[in-house]
Length: 150
Ligand code: RP5
Image (cartoon, rainbow, N blue to C red; front, top):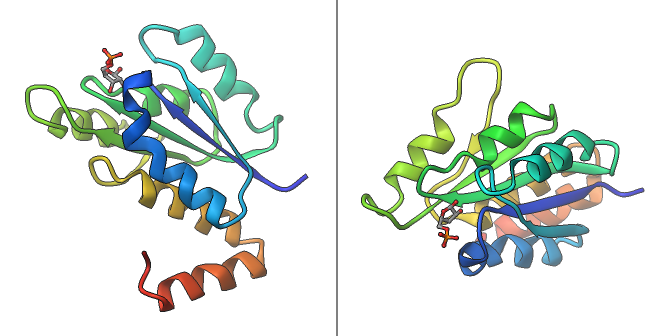
């Protein structure tokens, strides 16, 4: 089974900002699933998904959330798969709140955090993680860089 990537977001209102992740994953031929689930509104669903993700064949989990952005941190608490957090803009500080909520994890439970709204970079990190054991994919990444990384 080739490794899959999960793209999670806290609300349907995040979909537009998270779309680039799916676009890049498709471009690199990575199977992926997108789900809306919230650390606050559907915590049981989030923990069940994270706990089963390795068994389900996922290699990395991308989590986008805004405001009190706890989705990536909660997912990371329930799995040792790589978790990539995408803080989303909005709210009183237009994403700074989400950035700090996502990146300021306690020692021992890391979340690899990309820039505000940068779901594309989250996907590229997931591709790079999978490419560690996939030379063809690593070549595709090299070609993407050589072509200007767009
Ligand atoms: C977060 O709250 C979501 O990730 C979203 O970015 C933000 C607002 O969500 P809605 O109130 O629009 O559903 O949990």
